[in-house]
Image (cartoon, rainbow, N blue to C red; front, side):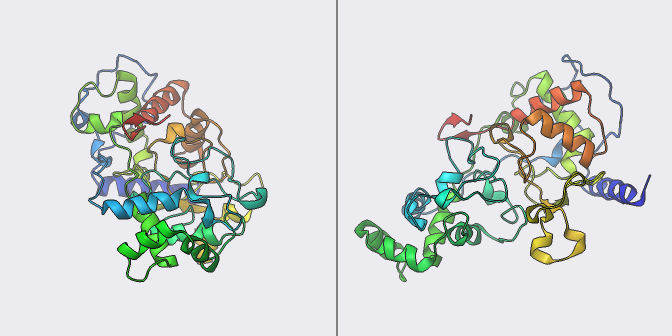
Length: 341
């Protein structure tokens, strides 16, 4: 075993031990049995404390939320009035656009896969490389990105100021009126309401013994036993740490690194941050293909196999993949009372 693999294993093991995730360490758990004797209550799953239920939507001013919602769907934030936040973060498509990379003004293609906006308030930083410390900072990025909205605050403010409804709404909520700061404040306030409750796994964590079927419970236990929860944990089931894409082997070694493959390095300039990314949340992952920062995995099955091989150093069996995918599908929540699809 080389030093890199040894250190990676030691890091994961120490994290798991420190947080009492109770991994059993059974490297060969054998073929999946759909009748696996696992209690439906989460406390019966070893290591189940790694995952937390989705929190409730925080109490927020309804008028500010509504203003943010209007701005989220307003194409006037872009230079040519063709692109809105909702163009790439479609709320009826899992909060993403399901494209390899998003398309901005003049048909310009971005360089990285657009993550879902749902539950993004749970992330400790925003963007794959973590360059935005808050939702407000993130909301300003696409407005100024030449590949996305290609605009600037002077142009956006001038357009919105010609709208009497906007002038009144901003005037009532902000003493400074329409500014770049107040625009992103309203958008971020709306985005903080974009939580997706009532996923089967949340009902399971709350003690509903029928929320997960035997196959989903088997997948959940494998998710814990194999170490997936060493990175994908907490209420967001991810989104709260950075990790190298390719802990056990270099996923990107077969191609020349593009700038977007460098990840956190683009922010810090530190060699140890090459190919390091914010760990994505797995909530609603079944409805947000394609996967990874480059969209290189088209299906959930493919993504699970890649994660097993390159992050865990494990060749997952067909039964493993079947169970893990079943569990991941149980992470799909609801928006406005309807399950995302």
